[in-house]
Image (cartoon, rainbow, N blue to C red; front, side, top):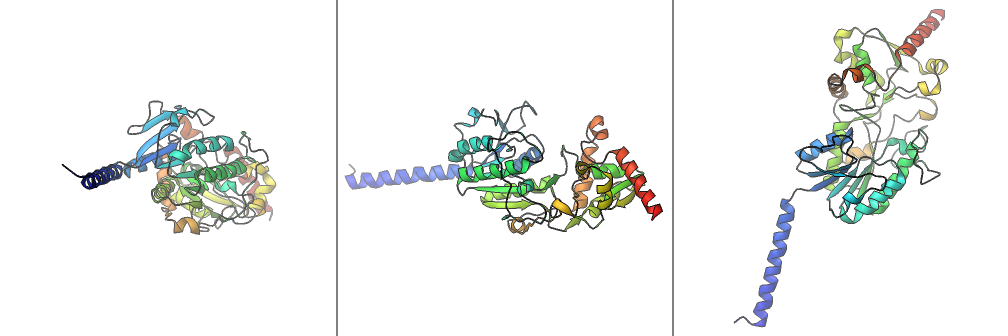
Length: 366
């Protein structure tokens, strides 16, 4: 018979063996990723790349897009506006919040998920900064929301709402979260058409208005580069705040226009550059909005010069602008006929013609 000492040693050995088996099983299981959203613009790129990297992916959304779910992905249906029961009773290694806009609902989901998720990445926006008169870095002041329960998303409230969402996420996850602030996210699947306008306009021929000067800086981020980098942050559980755009002055609006023309060399499109002071004299303030370009004077003079050293140090890399332009145009050509014809952004053709005519008249008069 075994004595007491031998029994204890055997028990300890069995316990150690069981613990080792649990550790090996955990290491063999794929890491679990929850994407809040998953079926819009960023979500499909995140999902595709996460599956390729070996993540087990779960989507949480309302089921309005891809109602039958995405192959290879677990789908939980609910709503950020308090309908979170589907999230209960699960554990995830990482969460990427792709749909957080209203602070009180981001707070609600972050506090629910924090005890059962190892890490959270919140996708915010460059718009979170309080001012763009000068270039911003991650330590620059962010906008303040007068009413923390605000739900209406407007041009004025969007940035401060994102800033408060950031704060709620970081508080809930207590040192286990990061905030990524993209600028203009561009590339295939972009529903806004803000960047897509340029290569599409270049295909249509005729005289094309370009704002400002070819040297005016722009900052963008290809959605595929953004998705790849965010997954790297999640894998490494990197914490902190990061501006996610191309380097200051790496690209200009001239580069965007040239790449767009090069993507459709047969179009014969001719470009005319119209100075911003003339545009301000001809257009209403809201019309002087041709992303990714922004005026180089006034309250948005620093909008395209955000610091990105921190993101590059954390591994952000970006593909050539020409590749993004080419791939965006190729994707656009696969869209439905009405979406190809009717863009949601860009310069109205009648306004473009009228402005070019007025500019040429001014040139003639000296």
